[in-house]
Image 1 (cartoon, rainbow, N blue to C red):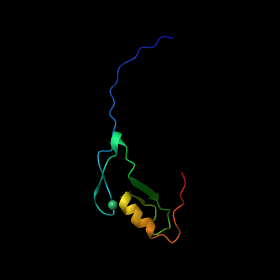
Image 2: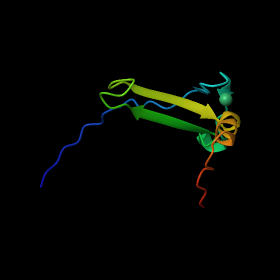
Image 3: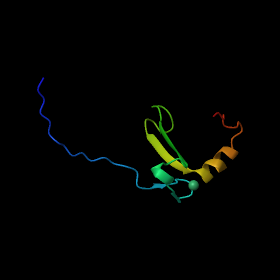
Length: 80
Ligand SMILES: [Zn+2]
């Protein structure tokens, strides 16, 4: 087998900043570039629902997540 390779440069995108949808504050990047301090939700609503096929997405910081789950009638399921 004979293969000849070209060097190809590609571009990648990485997250530069994240803003919490609820409080509007920037979410800080963790050391070593991780983004562990927020949750990201994306939901495509079915046709026939109130949002009829729309996709909604949002990010919440740790603080706002804590406030949100404190309102739950049924606590979040926790596991390790
Ligand atoms: Zn927030």
